[in-house]
Image: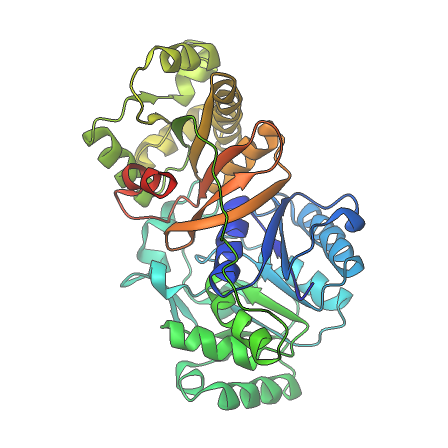
Length: 421
């Protein structure tokens, strides 16, 4: 194994696996801390998908270190800690605490942090994170129900999460190429910087970062940074040529969409799907809490739907509606109720014969795969930047598209099925 990866949520892990596959690396995604390192599949890269983004920092550190131990035992030569391209976290973590713990375990005195993913509009300039042409603090992420991001200065954000010195490698250095960036890394480490935020506004910068970071024991960032890693391994003759997704064979069967994210992107996707005539059932958390609506009602509705096209079950709502629900039910209770319901709906749909599922939202995706008992995902073709189709190993086999709430074009729910024809 060349690269051992630890991702703090499921959709981010799938996104990272896709980046590596696109670069020619044989990549397998496993769900949860591996129980037995000896049972890990043979691959150039293993991506461990955790659900650690919003849990207590101590638990996130423990799960991440346990995953690192399994990957070390399986022979990983380099490590990648993957978090969201919008740096989703709180002032207590979990990006800083996990990075610190991994640095200590891997005896790594210096690493980088770069959530940039230009293909999805996430760029870092002078240490500030942009979403499209907006600062992170002006984007819809300021209203995220679990991790509202209201400070775009990543040096500032990360410094509040770690006791290690955080610095910046600015755009003009990155733009000069890998040699200049490698020199900047050495200078930063000699000056006492432990974690350097690295600017990137284009894929060329991500390739530069990948080349300059080739010898770092640990890299941290969004999945975009992984774009440059396969080429580093290829230059060393460590990965073979060929198409890693050749032979991808999704199962046939009914199709469904489960949307738990309330991001602006998912709101658009739900609206487009409904406008296209996809049958839709809205799950209201307050109705769930009162018992007015439950899993049985959703599944009964699904069983009545005819035709060969997909159906949509969604809890997606505007930020104002989300806040109102949270005020009544509590922030964590509202989210957990929706996740549990959609996970049970997923299991019921599979029992009804659904074999192709799109799941929108990182927390929702994690709940769904856990409920379905999925442990290993085979990575398939890309639907939109950062979102591939996958196939879950086991019986019954299910095709899954696990989408971060913020990812995908407005027509994502409508067009994704064409790749499975």
